[in-house]
Amino acid sequence: MNKAQLIDAIAKDAKLSKVDSCKALDATITAISKSLKKGEGVILVGFGSFSIAKRAARNGRNPQTGKPIKIAAKKVAKFKAGSALAKSVK
Image (tube, rainbow, N blue to C red; front, side):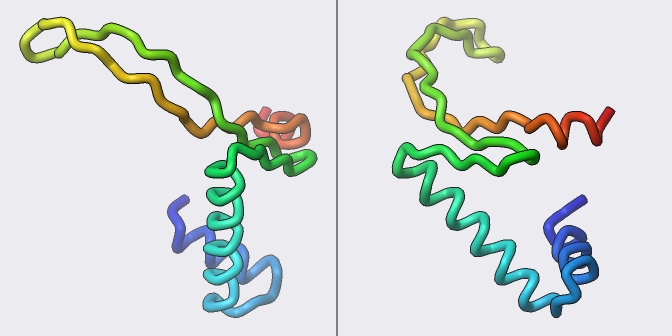
């Protein structure tokens, strides 16, 4: 499912216009992004939780040349599915 299909599904299920559904989805994504940028997690009970994880610096290899390279440390977004979502997928 892509973003346009998700907007259509939201509009149908919530009985909203596609424009309002798009605004709601964009606002949700923006709110989650801002929270993660601040270092705060987002927990949606039953659905899952978004958090920030730190990846340590490490050594890697350039796949084309085989030469070793250094990969810098960074923060990455992480999602863990909640129990209700996990059960619905089984």
